[in-house]
Image (tube, rainbow, N blue to C red):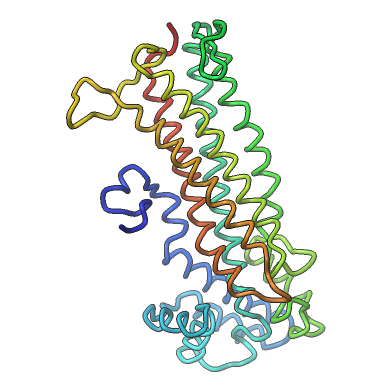
Length: 350
């Protein structure tokens, strides 16, 4: 079975086109070439090569179409795609050692591509957090004054207004939106520190080159290399897991409210059964629970991926590549599913 997020039919439940586009090979290659082009222009502005030659080469880099099979084989050989990408650039554009990638290292390019990617992810998630808050506010307006049974330890306790239940869904999302906004300065940062993370291969022009590259890409400067200090990346993943976890709580509540015999909520559409046509299953609520639990499982791997040895790790870094995109996909789908679910609700209350 392939990845559920992009599976031919399971993707009908799990797939999210917007987040998939952000992580697509085409978009990732675009980031890599944009970064290499920005770096070449920065080399020109620092005097490492002539500004005119740098600008010309940067334009060629930006429009270059890599050989994907060569990149695949190069990644299998080198553990990263950048050495083969640089080789292709130098072969096709011209082997100007002072104008293409000189002084940078593979992780500089890939980590900066991650920063550009997470910038897009954050923009998407912030928009969706605002959308789900609007949907929840609408539910509160429509049904907040109604009454349902408050339940503690899944037993009937005392009647509560629907607004009280909705508030337990919406309040965490406001906090998560604030967390996400606060993390942007920590994740939308240039990584440019050279092979061992101390800028020594860029010489006296290192800071000039850093500033020019960061400005071109619209990224912040980092006070130090984060080649092996991944706390900000893991903190970002933690925030996303909190988002999906809070939405999972909402989904679980809605599934329980929809139980026959309790009947505190109804939907305009739900899932059907192949054997029992009378059923209207709360599929989107179930999906929120599944995605929350999936992300809760994945976050442990991100904490393992913090353990980088010395000045460069291959194993820990590769683990991050495998897990972080999945967390972002689950979170993005959680937000879209939660909005769909809210918009399908036709009644809350007794």
